[in-house]
Length: 118
Image 1: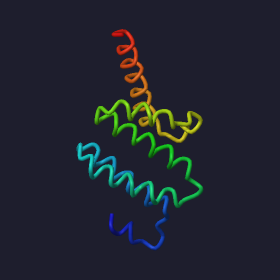
Image 2 (image 1 turned 180 degrees about the vertical axis):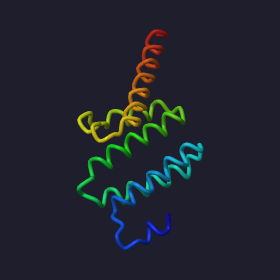
Image 3 (image 1 turned 60 degrees about the vertical axis):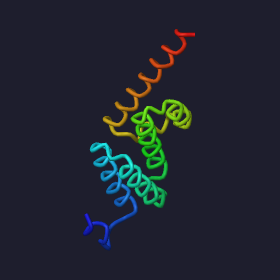
Image 4 (image 1 turned 45 degrees about the vertical axis):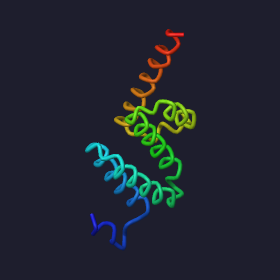
């Protein structure tokens, strides 16, 4: 990994993808502080790549939703979901999009349960 980071040919988009993979690894290991740190670094590099700015913003937002969802902070999930531009979901890979749909379904179910208990 260090050889990639210090390569003369590495682009900001390459670094974004590298740190996004590190984020995913730490998230899989349930090490959320390290995961979030790597997501922040990925975002920093990704936003420097104007060609991929919308893709980076969309993916990072969706990943932040996943983190808050995993923390069971549903109010924060609702807040972040309002920021999602549905036309930008095309930038997500199939797996990430599937997880996003799962979060939407769970949030809808939780909303339905809350309304039924009023």
